[in-house]
Length: 521
Image (cartoon, rainbow, N blue to C red; front, side):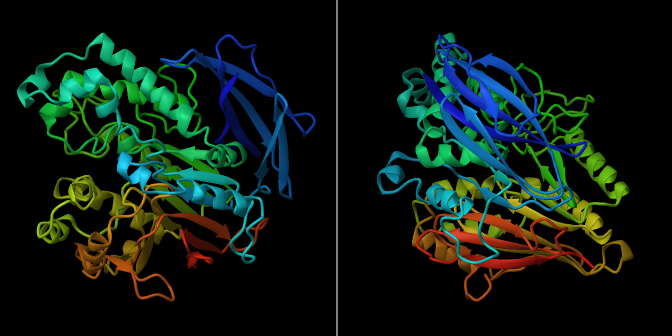
């Protein structure tokens, strides 16, 4: 019996071909599934791996579709089921959708949400042109960017008896306790089971089977707040064991890695994390892995022997790989728009101000945890500043930079602006588009009120560089307190685009909130 899939992953463009892989999970006792394509002459390679903790086998099919001067609809079949995905013309900018937070952080939130996958259903209608609004807002989408929390592991503390018992111990005993074989076995089955259950829900499964995805994990794919706990807690055997199990599941299901220790084709060279870069015509996509290196054990080193610290978001080795990729793209001179997936927003209300506001009313522990996790939290500000300076330098060379983020359960627009007198960084703008969550509900109204107030304060990032939360066009508010997802539509499908239309589709709204992002020059 088929347990999951197909899930189509984007592998990148190589030698004029649009590369995808297709993941199918079936019972281990079943015969290997077959994939057949509607387009003649396309070759398919197959690999497999056992699914940890489940009596299943994961099958991966790799396909490269040569791009042509026109868009293509590529049909494929898994057994008796038919699916298809869209490939853009060669050198064209892709049409994309972005989403995050595909789940619930508590059972009470889940019970209070009558239609958990309503926005997945709407994304599917837009993709198949069943929900056409106007010429700038419909599919089909070439890429589905999933920016974190593709699953929520939060319930493990309640449903796994050994883990629940450990969580009730006094702190010194928790830190000293071993990661038992029973814990590992239960967690392994739990994480794999979450992917099989969550991604098999019909509206979610329909999108994953028809829009090639680029996924990057965030904290709930591991555990809530991963990377923001004290060092001794992160270093303890149980936390490290949880991370190891979650990482194996992430690599199999989200990255479709069939061999332990291997990397997806777009993974940047020279690093052990999953930072990845893609090129599609004049567009670039940089997916930052902001969780793999967040919680090292005491004394851990990166790939070049540098000491990893508990306050970093990414290691020096990862940043060098990211900057080397950027250097290469800039030297080539053919990238006009770079989208950067940063699971936590680079521009967001500051932690210090919101902490003071949140202190006047109870019940906001989850929101406070998120804020401590963010770029604007004091331990991360220096690392954030280096990233902003590097992106401003790319912008000064004529590349439009757009940051894509989720995590915070609201939609928002942030803008980084520089008026530095240095010619390399003068009068440059970076847009930050936040969309969250496609399933997780927004914060309660009182928290949204304080977020809206905090958004009015301008963040002085550096001399001559500011971060500002802007109002949505045609509105007077800076936060959308509703479930939402984002679509990114180029001006002219099939031709090099000068602009992108960013559309936030919010629950309960017939039309999207729209922002136009212009090219530089």
